[in-house]
Length: 400
Image 1 (cartoon, rainbow, N blue to C red):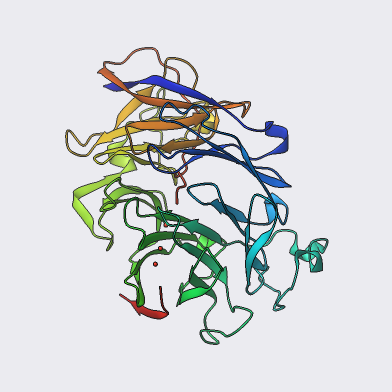
Image 2: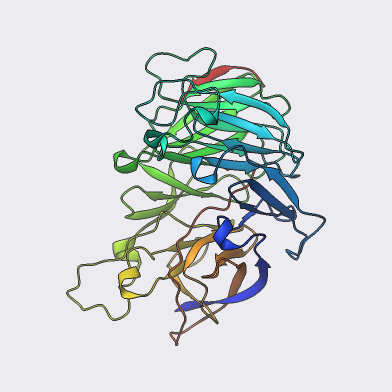
């Protein structure tokens, strides 16, 4: 059986693909933003319920090139926060710096505390640094930041490598600090979609592992759950009660609670749950594996992909899993080629997104009817999480 995708909308990019990263759809249903990062700016377009432009574009000047960090934008597009090699900086659309929090350098061999990007921007040894990330709370009240320690003032301890910060977006005040218990090559934040006091942090350590952290703030203490196993956090369900993860070795996709426990047998091993690629010989030992990708299409429906393991054969497959029904991955078929570039991102409202090959537009899809096998278009897209926004006040830290 397969599930046919139905096109819901086409959303044009804000900038030419030669000048910018691919566009991203951000935020929860009803408060979507389209954002695209160029070297000199982050451009943001508010969207209405039909994903059409609603109001004017917002252009926030960027403090450093896009290859030197990551970013997040407030739900109302009134502020962008850039996570760079040496600092986290909040910039207003006027170009004014609202605040900056300096931290240790993300280039691993560097022990300097830089005061500006210009100190290292042209240095060859800083050309390919590791990186952290930032994320807004769902209501824009707080900023979470994953940084290389220590901060410019004070440190948690001599053995702390990475820190997880809770910041006030109004002035950059550090409300809480925690040892992230990691040495990251990169990371990204995924917020609880309803509770501004919870946030997920997925960390990549290259071949060494993939630590997953879940943070909670009670107004006094920041508690951090170290979710067991090497897991990439791909998505948080609309209720915020479920996490979708893929193992670091890409063998298993699972639905977990925020403590990390697999829910009611909701785990799929790619080798047994995914049919062999079309045309594979019976003795072919090149079995599919899950991409570090996917998300919650809605509270009980997942989208995943096995593109990376199949791209050498010119095909890539996306899968729908109904966790409240048959629980068997069903291949998604498209009425036209869905594009071979990332992202494929679940929207939580019944839809998901693909980008066309030119990077000129995003296509938003929804589930059509299930059907028997037929001629289909497949895609070589990989899957990435939808970025949105996630938190509240003090400095205590608890670990579980």
